[in-house]
Length: 522
Image (cartoon, rainbow, N blue to C red; front, side):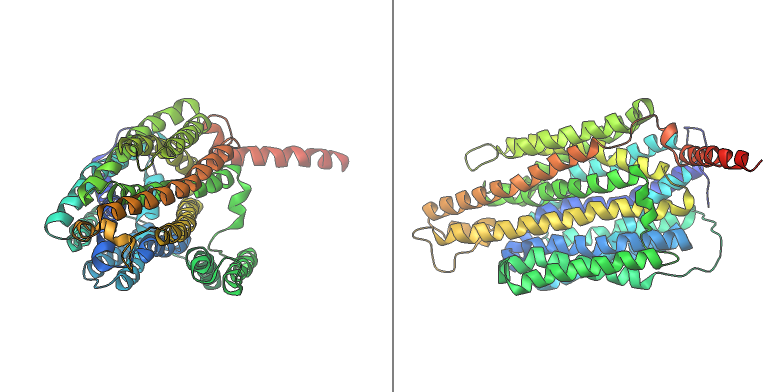
């Protein structure tokens, strides 16, 4: 394994590795900024707006449940093979998504794509923690944030342009060349040396975790709408999730090498970060998934225009990430994390002002503030977690943090999707003079929208705006919980909260507690 150096400057070898990692990160960045903005168009083309949230949630589901498993495998067998395997699977999933002929097929292929994504981003971030010192990491994280910035600015516009010209399928095919380039660079320049020793994989733990998350998401996303929240079916799903999570915890306490070592959560940094990023994930994915839908469905914008609404959010994220990296070294994790939490609350509060009669600029400004909040919050928690453990646990610790963020996003999207479908159905049924079989997909297709009476279109847009407005209250609540959680973040200098410093304090505490006992024996 490569050890981090103390110098803040980067060697030629490190720069080439950074280039490969940046290309790998671009896979996740392009998928988030490009696919999210054109998905309303895809839903209109394939039909099935009621399955709209599934295209995001199933991707998040498969990428979420595999994250801790990939993290553990990376600690056991090395980062490189896991990262390359994930990149290959992501490329295969992207090709299949581009060839999908129905929303059902697209959902299945997005699941495959998510299986690859579960390895790409967390393992990339783990490698950064492995080979760069904490001083270098602020610079490298700036490079990585730059990838998100470019994807945030160029991605939505490019995705919209491709959708409006060549067609939405080419948005997925765009991932292929980036994936192949990432594989080539990492294969050539990232040299990893790991200790070869036997391991006992926690297969039961991985299976129980997967089944528990699937049951929970199914209950939130499909159970309430299809069967009713108080139905036997929905309550059964929730009960199954609780039982499976309990069995998973029992398995992790008994397993010699658990998927998620529960001892990690004794560390206050990891415990607080996990809860904070869980609710922050709901904020992030709620904005990136439904603000573009507001632009296209309520304001009648194109896919390109929907993409540009989120571009400033990515720019703000980049700037905040770079600023927070330097701030962490000077003032510590707590002030930087709290700054992010406050910005999330302010941005989510501004989002509540978005309505049928307001300007889309309200959404642009709100998303920008939220982007800045995510930059501070994400950077602070990830660097803190990586600095709080040694190499042997860095993969699973990083992956666990990413797991909580994506599971929070998945559950948040499921709740928001269920709310949207339920409230939208009620409002559409009350529209007078509406044609039989009226569906929300008509708002996303300009040709279909032109065939509907203008009065009905206005009523539909108002119904969608009102439903999305209610859903944004979930985003605001998540932001408030995130801020409240971050107040519990440990205070102090970065050096005082490192794994080495914590180990010294534990050893000193142990020695001091043993001294009276030793004295009593004389």
